[in-house]
Length: 253
Length: 339
Image (cartoon, each protein chain N blue to C red):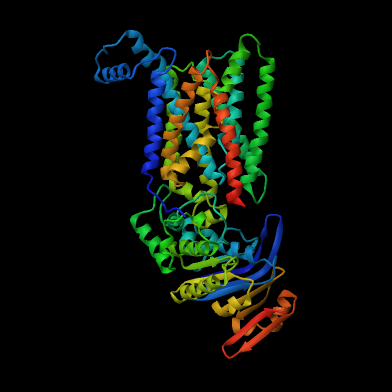
C-alpha cells in the first residue's frame, strides 16, 4: 500500500504554510521529515493524516483519495503518535492503549476481549506490559511515548506517523524508539516521523525529506542527501560531520 | 504509583451514601419518623396492605417526603451526570453544567414564566426551552467563530451568553410585582424542592432518563473524546457530530432538573470529582457512580435544607457553601499536578 501527497498546498484557513509538496511512503519503509522550526513539518504531517484538508492537491492512500475514506476507515489504516502530553484524566495505561481499538468498533461499542488481547500484545511487543495497570499520568515521559506507540500498534494500521517521537526522551529511550521504528518497518508498516536530529534519520530512516520554508529542498536516500552541505543549507547554520569506522554522525558546529 | 484498582469499594461507598441519604431524608424532619415505622410503611406499600402505623406517619412518608425524596435523587443524579459529561468533553475538571449557559437560559425562561403568571407546568416548559435556546445560541456562535481552539471559544461564548441571559433575569425581576412574583422568582432562582409533588416527577424523569441513556450508550467514545481533538480524530472518532450529541444530551438532563428544582449550582462540579476519585475516569463506571453519588448528595443537602433552621434554606445556598471551598481546594491541588 502507498500513502502519498501529490502537489499539496498545505496550511490553515487563514494562511498557507507550504505548496507544491510531493511525498510518497510505501509499506515497509521509513521516511524521516527534517527541517527548521516553522518549515511546515507538523502541518504536512497533519495533512497526510487527514486531520487538515489540503488547500490544493490530494492525499492518496492505497490508490484512493484519503478524503473519500470515512474517519474510521482512515484510522484503521493510518495511526498517529503525537508528541507526548500530560493527560487530563488518570486513565490506566491499558485503557489508553485500548483507545487505539476505537476505530475497529461501532459507535456504541465497548472494547471486546479480542481488543484487550491486541492491546496487551502491543504493550508486550514494546516490553512495557508491566505498565498496564498504572495511571498514564504517573509514568515517565519516555514511558508515555512508548505507550502512545503501543496505542498506534493496537490500531493495527498500515502506516504510523510520529511527530517528533524522540523529543523529551532521554538518550536510552531515544535509542529504543529508533529501534522500534526499524522493527515496525521490518514487520511491513510504512513509518513517517519528524525529527530535529539528522542522526536519528541516518539511523532509523531509509529516505529523508528536507522541508524548509514550506518547500521540499531535497528528498532521497538518507546516505545521499544527509550531507554536511545539505544540512548547513537546511538549517542555515554550521554543521560538523564526524566520520569513523562505524559510520557518520553530525553535530551542530 | 498506585495500581489500577477494583471499583467495587468505590461503588459500595457511593451506594452506602445513597442509602444513608434515603433513610435520613425519609425519617428526619419536623415530624420525625422511626426506622421501624418507615420499614413497616414501605413493606405495607410493597405488599399492598395497610401499615400498622398512625395515618399521619404514612402520609408524611408517602405523600410529603416520598415525592421530594425521588425528585432530590433524580435532580442530584441528573446534575452529576451532566457535569461528568461536560468535564470529559471539555477535558477540564473545573467545568460544570452552568458553563454552556444551560442554567442561565433555563432561569430566564422560568422568571419570564412566573412574570407572565403561567401555570407551573408551563413555567417548567419555558425554563426547559430557555436552557436549550441558550445552549443552541452558544453552540452556533461558538461554531461560527473560526479558531484553532474551538473548546476555548465555546466556553468563553458560554460565559458571555450566560451573562446576557443573567441580565435578562435581572430585568424581569426588576419589572416583576415585588409582592407576588418577586419572592417566587427569588426562591426559584436559589433552588428548592419544597413544592415537589407526584405529577412533577414524570416530566423530570423522562428527559433525565433519555439524556442519561444517550450518554451511557456513548461511554467508550466519551473516553476517547477526553483526548486532544486531533488525537481523538486520528483514532477514528468523528468529534464534531459526537460533541453535538453529548452537549444536547447533557443539556436536556440539566434543563429538566433546573425546570423542576430551580438553579442548584456546584453539584455538577463537586460530585463528578468525588465519583472519579472513587471509581476512576472510565465513563462506563464514572457515569453510574456519579449518578448514585449525586442522588445521595442532594438527598443529604435537601434534608439539611429543611431541618437546619426554622425556615427552609434554599438548596443553591447550601450547595454553594460546600462547593466554593471545594472548588478553591481543587484549583490549588490541581496546580501542583498540572505544572
